[in-house]
Amino acid sequence: MFVSDNLCVNANGNLTIGGVDTVDLAKKYGTPLYVMDEDMIRRECSVFQNSIDKYYDGHGLVCYASKAFSCKEIYRIMQSENMGIDVVSAGELYTAVQAGFDVSKACFHGNNKTLEELKMALDYHVGRIVVDNIYEMETLNRLAGERNEIISVLLRIKPGVDAHTHNFIRTGQIDSKFGFALETGEAFEAVKKALSCPNMELKGLHCHIGSQILDTQGFTAAAEVMMEFIEMLKIKLGYETLDLNLGGGYGIRYTQEDDPLPYDAYMKAIAEVINGFCETHDVRRPFILIEPGRSIVAPAGITLYTVGGIKEIPNIRTYVSVDGGMCDNPRYILYQSAYDALIANKADQPKTEKVTIAGKCCESGDLIGENMPIQHCEVGDIIAVCATGAYNYSMASNYNRLQKPAVVFVKDGKDRIVVKRETLDDIVRYDI
Image 1 (spheres, rainbow, N blue to C red):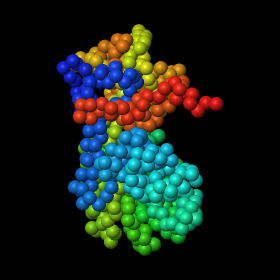
Image 2: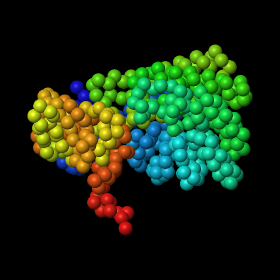
Image 3: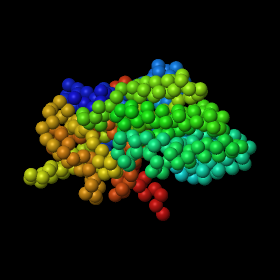
Image 4: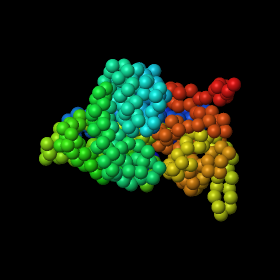
């Protein structure tokens, strides 16, 4: 019935998440409201970790891609689950450090890290810095030299693999702002240069082919390409790659039409390729890193809204307006991303209508979705949009000077606030 197995209906006919009544949450904390199921987040962490243990003898590390959802509490959870993380900015890194995360287990990504961010990474002794371009490589080597340090880096490689996903979220092809291209020889030259940097230890390679990928073919193709490159580096340069980071991008179920694989299927497929390659070639088996983000937090999250105006345009559509929109979920206006929604206080009733859920921003494109099946809507109903744990809070904005919603975690039938709702004073806090 639901896109995620942490959602149920209680005796009152209300939607529950992690055993907590969502209508009660809306009354207690107000709407819009992000709600995250902590037990589910921890469970998904274990699934990925167990997949490395089962299919790769534990010779790897799962790094949560914190761009999906970043706050102090999520880093505390990742620390307690013995996870690594990836970060892409000073803000994400600083948040992790403030939460007490051990950033020796962090990968620092980004195609244009600032000088201040690189210095911060060195100050905090980030475990692996993923170098994206020659300018960054030269800058890092200089900064490390000034400190008389040797830093560990990975090089981001474009494997030229089509991820079969939306063009805006494909990142492994040659025409991408990220990384060094294999096809042109750029990646090989970058490895040579990195090996010549006296204050840099090249630990290995990184690649990422895209997001919301629902099959294993792209990942196995990338693993094959990267292992062939690793073999070439050994033959031509005598360099043995220690780490291979294959990124993330594992797809989830946003609607009933999505058919994601069990998450351990990805590691199983990748491990078969790498183990097989190493058995038949004279190549050292690399330490594997993977970077799931969306797949850990998206299914665990929902967003609650209160229905306001309802506008029926005969023979055209019915607009159901809510008290949030593109400010707390910009994914529809960016990617036309599909979601499943229901009325939380009528969760036991059938979906008999199709509506367009509209936000309150002053933009015609401010929609949560179009032609969405839902129960009969009335003013004051609570709408729950499912699978919003990733790229909603983290991409939220103050457009129209709207306040960002609170984030509530539920666990063991109890709820707690982990990010406060912004106030109007917060909106003007930095105005002069």
